Image (cartoon, rainbow, N blue to C red; front, top):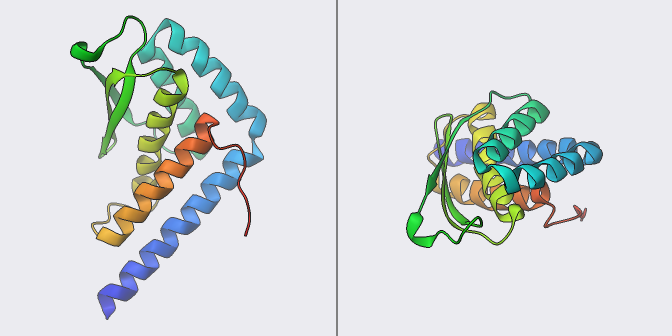
Length: 158
C-alpha cells in the first residue's frame, strides 16, 4: 500500500513537472521559434554545434545544468550530409544520440528534446525505478519533444 502511494505521488510530481515545462515553453513562444531557426541553420553547418546550442538554450530556459552530450555516428547508414537520428539515451547528466539517418533538422531536434526531458525529470524529481512512472515519463518526453521541435503546434486543454 505504501509503495502504491509513493508511486502515485511520484507520478503526480511528473505530471506537474510536465505541465510547468509546457507553460514555460509556450509562454516564450518567440524564444522557441528563434531557437528552432538557429538550430536549423547550425544543423546545415555542424551537427555538434547544433546539439550544443540546443542543449544550452533549453538548459537556460529551464534553469538546469547543461547535460554533457555526445553524438555517435553510424557510418553504415550515413547518407552524405544528411543523417537519420532515432536512438537516444540519457544517463546521469550525459545525453547520447546515435545518428544513423535523418531527413530533417526537426528529427534531430526532437530526439535531443526527448532526451533533455529525461534530464529535466532527473534534475527535478530524481531517478525513479517504478515501471509505470517510466512508461509515463517516456510518453511525456515524446510529447515534449514534438512541442519543442514544432511538430506539435498547440497544447489543447480538456
